[in-house]
Image: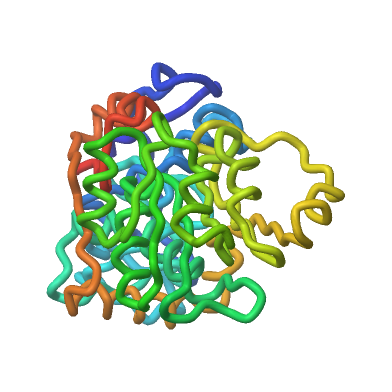
Length: 323
C-alpha cells in the first residue's frame, strides 16, 4: 500500500510517499481501507517533533473507510462503514490496521469525507463543551471565548455552542475568517490582527469577563486568554498552533482572580466514553445542528502541501486527504 512516512522530524518536506506493508489484524483489531483521512494540527505537532514520536512513523490520527479484514474478538464485520480518531498516529496510508475499540460504525447519512473531517474535531468539541466545565457549569446565556473560531474545530464549536444557548465570542485572523465564524454561530467576533482582544471581551461582557476561554492557539494567546476570564474562570488550553505557551507562574492565577487552567486531551475522554460521545456527535450532525465544512481536499500524495496550507493559516473549516 502507499502511505506517507516520516523518517526525521522537521518541516513538511520530511513527509515522503513510500510503499508500506499491509498488516493483517490480530485479536481485537480490524483493517480499514481508507476513503478519506483527516488532517489536523496534532499531525503537524507530531511531524515537527513538538509531540515526540519514534521515527520512522506514519502520521495522522483520523480516518474513514470500509472494514476489509477483522481479527478475533471484534463486533465489527467486513464491509462495515467506519470512522475513528485514534490515540496514535498511522492514518496517512491507503489502509490501517487498528484496535477495533477505537473505531465506530458510521450512520448511512454521513459520507466518508465528512466523517474523516469530523471525528477528531467533533469529539474534541464534544468533550470541551459537554465534559469540561468552569465553576458552576455553563448555562444558556453565558459568554464564552473561542480562539481560532474559523478553524476546523472552531466552526464546529460555534455551531454547537450556539445550539446550547451559549453566547460565543470568537477570535480569528482577518475579516474573512471573522465572517466565517459569525456564519458558524459566533455572536461576536474579534480580529486578533487588528483588535485588542481583552478590551473587546471586557466591552462585550460589561467589564466582567467570561467563565471560560477555549484556546487552541497557545503561545500567542495564552496570556490574553487569562485576562479575558472573570474571577474563578477556567482557561482550557487544548492546542499549540502558534507554539507551546511559556511556563506559567501559578501565583499569576491568584493575582488574576483565583483562576483555573486545564490542559485536556481527547484520548483521556474517549478511552472509556467513545461510544456515548460519538452518539451525541452523530446526532448533532445528522439533525443539522452542526454542519461539517470540508473546505480543502488533497490527494494522499499531496499531504505535505496540506500541512503547508494548515501551518500558513490558509485553511478554513476542515481539510481531508482523499484516497
